[in-house]
Amino acid sequence: MTTNANLMTEGSIPKKIIIFAFPVFIGNLFQQLYNTADSLIVGNFIGSSALAAVSSAGNLIFLITGFFIGLSMGAGVVISTYIGAKKVEYVKKAVHTAVALGIVSSILMTFIGTVFAPQALLLMGTPANVLPESTTYFRIYFAGASGMVLYNTFTSILQASGDSKHPLFYLICSSLINITLDIVLIGIFHFGVGAAALATTISQFTSAILAFIKLVTVNDDIRLIPKEIRFHKFILIRILKVGLPSAFQNSIIGFANVVVQSYINYFQKAAIAGIGAYTKIEGFVFIPITSFAMALTTFIGQNNGAKKTDRVKKGFLFGMICSITLAELIGLIIFIFAPKLIAGFDPSEDVVFFGVQRARICAFFFCFLAYSHIVASYFRGLGKTIVPMLVMLICWCVIRVSILAITSSIHRTILITHWVYPITWVLSTIVYTYMLYRQIHIKEKSPKPM
Image (cartoon, rainbow, N blue to C red; front, top):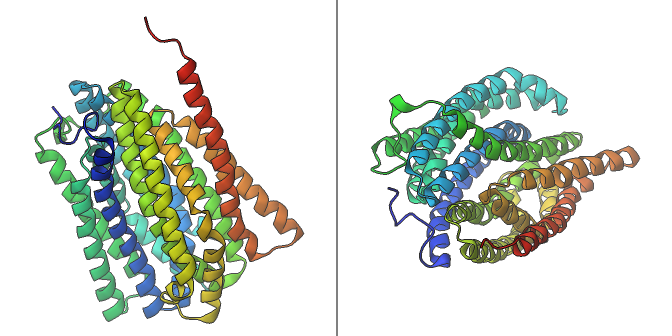
């Protein structure tokens, strides 16, 4: 049976959530550090064009990878629910089905990424002086993207059981490898922007191998037996039912960001590089948000499976307070130190201008971003992944793209590509509040079983 130390259905709620969230926080911090290191090293050793190339490819990469990461999130929800309900055989079948799905997903993503890179970048209006390096980065990244998919699959299984410590160790190892390779390949040997993608690929495969070794050796219900990896139809259907909305949600966000990036590309290299540098800094805001969101998804999944509604509500409230508070504190730091932070990537005056402009507009709206992600994790933990998918589709895709289309037809300005984010964060907060009220109100009004 899954070890009681990892179960989140008993004991202090704040303690359980923090014990889970803290390693995820540190792991995300290291992951963001090595993502940022890519851009820092590229910007300082190769130049603005290379920094723009990495930045231009970033949103397109998330559009594709986000879909498959969403599937692994669905698998994690299903596994955590079975663990909470103490259905051991279902846990085992779900683990092996999740890994089978991860293997197929990794093959598909590698094919899509390597084949369609140039066409997608052209459709985004990537400037001609940035396109060759963007294409090189994109293709090398996706040639080894299976490491990323499998790592997310393996860690979703570990985290579903309440184990967030081992994924932390693997991320730290991966981060150190990535940064070291960046320094050696780019800083010392000057191999170019493709080396940054190669460093990321090698580091992702390393973390995937470490997570795989853990799963095949762990003495637990989630132990992976390679010869038993296969699809169990009813489990696969449930994973897809939960995971596909999350996958589409990620892709919806990715698609909207790609559209925004295409508008940014119109303003050429300095805007692409400056805003790209800002997005690396903004990534640090997502660290507490995603840490508590992941903790809550597992916490709510296990407690919902164990029918402990009161713990679900208390855990959700605690995670919400922590996430919003930390996001706003980081936002304040970004607002104050934005010029120095952006200049660390590229000190060019135009690059710093565009990056600081975005930072100063978005920094105080991170509370709405945190709120939206935490409420999404609440519904995801309950297995109601359609709700966050629809909210993101309407607010973060349809409305975001519509605002850009309407305003650009009147007057094209870089400012709207900044403001479109806080505007849609506020809108999603309003919609999520209504959906949350409905969920709680309907549950309280439901007749109690006799």
